[in-house]
Image (cartoon, rainbow, N blue to C red):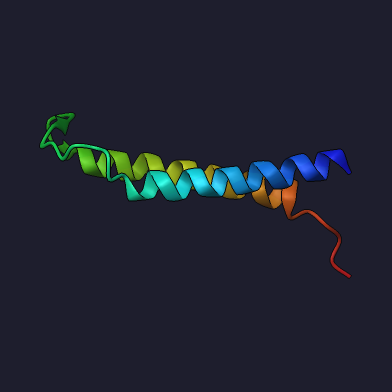
Amino acid sequence: MKRARRNQGLAWGGLIALAILHLDFWRPQRLELYFGWLPEEIVYRLAWILCAWLYLLWFCSAVWSGDVE
């Protein structure tokens, strides 16, 4: 029971963190290029997508793992 409650809290915290990171209103818009051709905004979005994918994998295995009857 404690583990399920902790996972539920982590799930809500992760969802809120991903939503805040998705909005990214605090970041200054810069025209910096990585590897000479990749804009910073694309790098940020790719990192966000990776975090969201990892969150989804964790969520499906830890939180949403109940038996379906």
